[in-house]
Length: 160
Image (cartoon, helix red, strand yellow):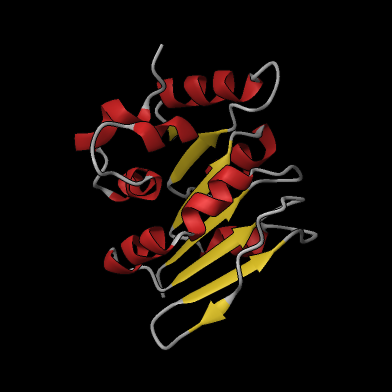
C-alpha cells in the first residue's frame, strides 16, 4: 500500500489541509499509485471526512502521542515547515516536501525550508503555488518529490 502523510504539527494550516484533501488532489494521488492519505490536522478548522473504499483510504486525526508510525509507513511526507516535523521526517529518510505557511508572522519557516532545500534535503513551496500560471495543483507539485518534480521546479520556489 503506497501512502502519503501530511502533518501540520501542533498548529493549524487549513490552506494545506483543504488543498490536499480536495477531490482533484485525491484523484492525482490515486493516479500516482497512492492508496492511502493520512492527514494530521492539528488544531485546524478544516476537518475532511475520513473514508475508505476498495482502492483508497483517507485517515484524519488531530494529534497523536507520536508520529513515528505514520512516518514509517509513509512513502511521501508533506509537512508544514516546523523544525520538529522537518527533522523527524528527514531522520526517517522519507521524501519530504515542505509547505511554508506564509500567514505566520516573522516567518522562520521559510528560512528553515530554504536552508534545508539548499542543502539538498527537501523541496518546498508556499500555498501561492495555487496561482502558478498553468493548470497545476499544489499536490501535483508536491508529489514532484516522487520523481515528477523537475519540470515544475521553478513553480515550487517562492517568487522574490
